[in-house]
Image (cartoon, rainbow, N blue to C red):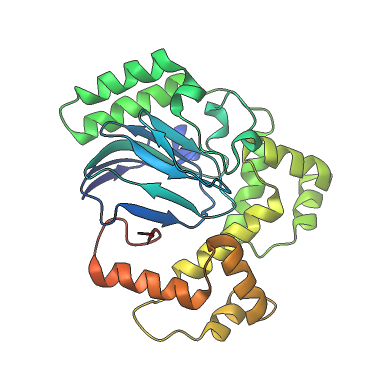
Length: 279
């Protein structure tokens, strides 16, 4: 698969990790994505894809694209035989200035871009992207669209600063200390987080700690799960195992088996750092 990525210019760089272009045949028809502390926007330019998010039993088809706020549990992404899209990996707080509704309303409920920006706007954007000559031109068009839609968002400074502290500590920070340092009540901080990120500060901290821990594991060799748990600051291995199942639906051992399958069957694939084969 071809993957082209770049960081947008200011002020979008304070909201977005990268803009990306993805095209080609996916490694698996169905991937499971463990929850990461990062919202996502995809503008689809190829055949529809399918998503099963949160506690949904059935998958839903997305033709124009989708918007995913910070998830709290794993979600399944079904690719067509060939996929083509551009997208945005947001910082935890970065999607809020582009949403017409509180992020909490979309928690574990992926929606189409049409539901967020309206049919005429996304139809026009997809037409312009489809006629672009190459990926970097497409990313520039997407960046310009985001610049036009950027809105002032109440409470963004508070949530951005506090989220940055959570990220810098990989989630190992007392939430009470954060609200005290910010000069607001824990209730006010939690309300702002749910409005702009979709989850509470405590839940975001859990997601950061889990993601940091899993992404640091070398799945190519033997894994001492007790050492992993202690190193990540979990109370014990049982607590770590509970978190693993809560986030992924898998035990740590089973997760390692599935991750190793991906690395064995598709070494060096652009998607090999986080998604798991689910088919």
